[in-house]
Image 1: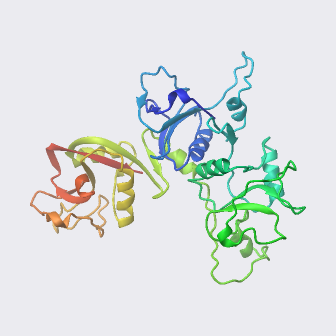
Image 2: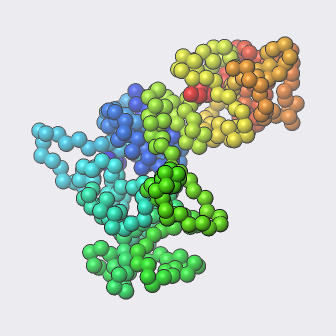
Image 3: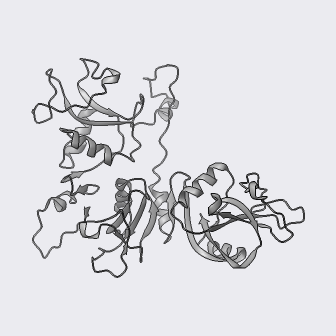
Length: 378
C-alpha cells in the first residue's frame, strides 16, 4: 500500500467498509488486505482508528473531513492499458502486506513471530524479494522502533552476524553502527553470532503448539526450570475483526475483545435506545466490572457527549438493579459524592456523566429534556 500525501490530516467515513480500532498501521493494513473489496484505508495513530474503503478516495471528494493526524493509504492495482510505473511506492506495494514510508523511502513488512532460526527467517524474506532489516544508523534504529511501537513481540531479529569475528551485513559489508545493551553486558557470548532487539525479559518463541505435542508424546525437549510459563497462541482473531466490521459503524476493541458501536446522542428513552441496538443485532452496553468500566471510558476518550446511557435498572418489585436478561448486577460505579443513586420513585435507569469522569447517576426511563449517547455491544 502507498500513502497519498495530499490527503494527510483528512479522512472520510462516508460509505466505509468498516471503522475499527487498530493499534498499528500494520494491523490495519493486514485487515484491509484480508477484507473483500478493500481498496484503501484511513489511519489515525493516536486514536488507533482504522477506516476501510472499497474505492480510491479522490482529493476532490466532498466527504473528506479535516482532522489532524490522519493518513490515507491505497492498494496498488496495475492497469493493463498503461505502462507499469516504476516508482518506489508502486514497486513496494506489488507484494501483499508491504507498506511504503515516503519519509524514509522504505518498503517494509512486519512478520509474525516464528522460531528463532535466521536461515529460515532470511529465506522467508528472500521469498518475498526482500531481505531481513539492516540497521546501519541511529536514524534507522529510531524509525524501526517507531514502526514497532504497537508490536507485541518481545524479540525482533535483525540483519548482521560475526561468523568470522567481525559483524557484517549479509552482503559482506562491515557494520559500523551498533545499539548494544551495554548495561546488560551485551554482546556477551563469543559463540553467538546473530542479533536480536529485545523489548522485555527472556522469552522463547515457538512455531509449534508444544502443549498439544507433549500430550501426544511427541515433544521430548521440555526442560524443567522454575519460573517458566507456557502460553499457547490462540486462533488468529482476524475473523473476529472481520465479523465485527461487517456491520457499518462498528469498532473492534482487542483490549476487551469487544465489538461496539457508539451512537450519537438521542433523547433519553431507554426503550427506544435499546431497540436501536437490537435492530443492529446487538445490546445496550452492560458494565459488569471495573475492568469493563475502564475499557468503556477508554473508547469514549474522544467522544464529546455529556451523558452515556448504559444497561441496567431497578424497575422491579424488589428494587434490585438487574441487566436486561434479568441477572442481578454486582458491580456499580455510582457518584456517591453527589449522593447517587438518589433512588427517587421514578429514577430506575443508569447513565454515566462525563464531567464526573463517567461516574453513574440514576435517571428516569424517559427524559425529553435530556439527550444521551449510547454504546451497542455485540
